[in-house]
Image 1 (tube, rainbow, N blue to C red):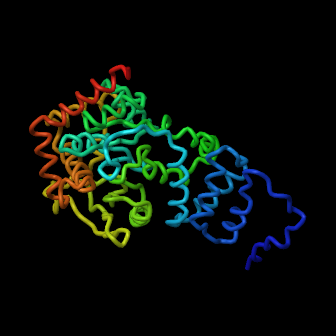
Image 2 (image 1 turned 45 degrees about the horizontal axis):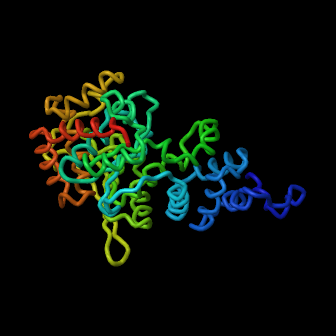
Image 3 (image 1 turned 90 degrees about the vertical axis):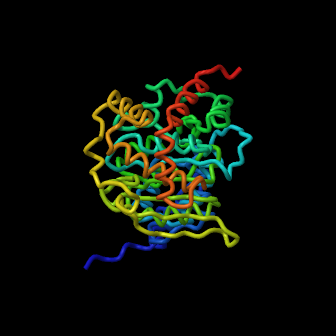
Length: 365
């Protein structure tokens, strides 16, 4: 039997005065197997986001957190700090009406489903501040939208016009979260997912209070839903495809958690749905995954012009349904599929993309 790890009382020779940015108090708690309170998490991530924390301590801190599921308090505290440091833009749209469709990534890549869902939802009346980034595949939301003519790094004034006039704005994550750069060298050096992979969808730069979030592990579905409830989401839909996708999937059942705001602070309902229950034929979505940026861009346009293969259309429909449910435009996923189909059939989604391209490319002056 292995000896128990020594207590910190036996390591007195390593004691040193605390210094600015010191993560040691939090490291000691995590080494002891304890979780952080909301305030402790907020304090620790405050040191990280200001660049005060030493890289070695930051690496140890992120690695210790990655050994287990983060708690609701740990995620909520970290997200609160990241939101505080975000670069935002003003808008006349009430944040309680704004939707985001950003997911965690970290799963096999199909095509740009969450971005298509954002455009479909916007075409049906939602206001969508789509949080996104470049992808390790080279065909993420930023790359595809850029290839289609959207100015992905538009100024705040232009983003505001996109949101208010086209009903959808693209929020390029690196431009809105400059404080996250302090952790980037450490995250790259670690080479495995950290709590930051979960924070992105929780830190929309305009504080969107409606969200559709795909996650890369089923264990994150109820967790992220509880965090969103804690952070005051008006309505949210969190999901994981049981075939391993961070999307509503046509290839298997999907685990779903719905968050609704109420007088008691909100409720969470967890359930499973299937393609068949939503009127969709079961197809492996990876079978239509584009191989490169050109193919991804073509498929994106084909979906919006309602001429894509049925498998791509159906994936778009069920993910747009989750977005429409989070936006409060429909009451259930089946209703969302019907509305999304109407949007594609009438050409409204194609028009929304054209408006986004036009407005994002105009001068802020």
